[in-house]
Picture 1 (cartoon, rainbow over the protein chains, first blue to last red):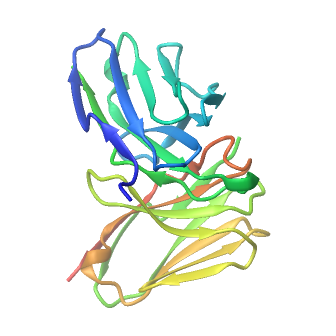
Picture 2 (picture 1 turned 180 degrees about the vertical axis):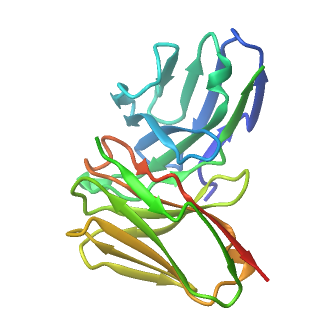
Length: 116
Length: 112
């Protein structure tokens, strides 16, 4: 069992550039979540997918943020025209949600974004 | 809007002592989670509490849930240095449809 993986682990970019992060959930977990964590705070929910369907995206921080999960397996989170305030840890989590019963979320190692 | 409040936010204690971290939340929920986070690392699941009166224990940590009081506690018994970390409680109110709402975390330092 390889757990949730995320790539890259660290990303440094200049303000105004676009960045994309990837998350590979635990195999056969059909729900996938994205969170943002800033220093000294708990993770903040951004969006989630049930298989390939994005069921909640109103919590994405702005229209510069978008996420996809095209085949119901891995997911990507893109931030366009990055700003210094986007600097944070971006966490991905997955859960099996079998038969309508929701279970605990398992988190990946995160991608730490620094916007210069 | 769901609010999750933890206290204390910072705790420094000596090895061998007992202490309790409190987690209050503002909306009815019967699903509460405790996570541990080491510096620069991701979150490790500690406990899943799914009903009123639930109590779970793992080693020196014990978590409980009182849904009527909207309160969960994480009790540390005879603390050891390896338990130094940040502990988060998180609440789920819509079966995961709103993700988890986290508290700000309790930064715990256990000194020899």
